[in-house]
Image (tube, rainbow, N blue to C red; front, side, top):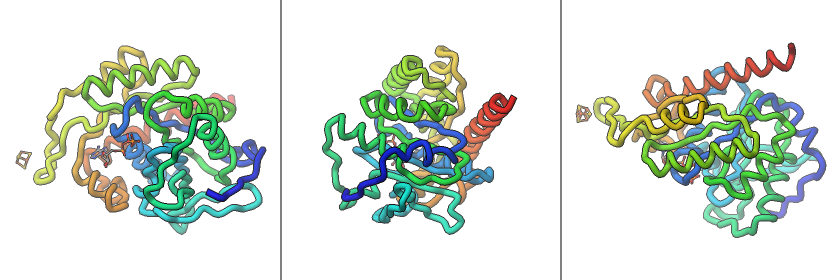
Length: 279
Ligand SMILES: Nc1ncnc2c1ncn2[C@@H]1O[C@H](COP(=O)(O)OP(=O)(O)OP(=O)(O)O)[C@@H](O)[C@H]1O
Ligand code: SF4
């Protein structure tokens, strides 16, 4: 990690970013990075230029999901240049994973170093013009989250999407995330219940293996929008492992359609915010 990005460039580098959306989850492994990646693709399908900032310092998975592991991050006079997996440059990625020497290197840092890295990540990436910046955060409500929220506050983020699974523990963890959002005054865009039902690989029928509806009940209880259920789809797992873009490759699948609806809700909220800003 020998890069030494330019300091004091935050205002410049974020000035072309229209909307900032954070993806949070109270617990690891509930599909936060999956949602971040597929949501970014769905927004791109809607014609938007999208960036993903992966600040999950201890478990960055965005490079693998886009099949760009091992890509080098270059520096320009303004800071770090994101990785563009496509020629049209309508998708921009930045992750700690690009800065680690080896694929399985672990980040063993104490809080202050992590916080400094997050600050640099938010300020020193040369995003250019972006309609949406999706920030994939680590699980929980740690120092890193406070750091992310503090550093994006000046850009008036649209808010946070909270990802949970139907099981009670994960839902309980999201309750803590909601409290975190309240305390840090981060708007909540809504709650997604991921891995909600199982899509049969043979007939694509969706069956509710676990109890369903915890995410929706929680959203109602906290008076925040429920953004929908995304089923556990083995094809989605496979696509992620192979670096394939699920929502592009399987647009009619139940999971891709569910993600598409979340994207539409986020776009509507974004438009409302733009209208309020101009009125
Ligand atoms: N709806 C889904 N259908 C099928 N597989 C899924 C779904 N959501 C997530 N997965 C799989 O579950 C695993 C965990 O997902 P992911 O890495 O997105 O979780 P996370 O919450 O970001 O985890 P971490 O705590 O490491 O940040 C991955 O292997 C992913 O492919
Ligand atoms: S979901 Fe049921 S009907 Fe469909 S293939 Fe599986 S077992 Fe058969």
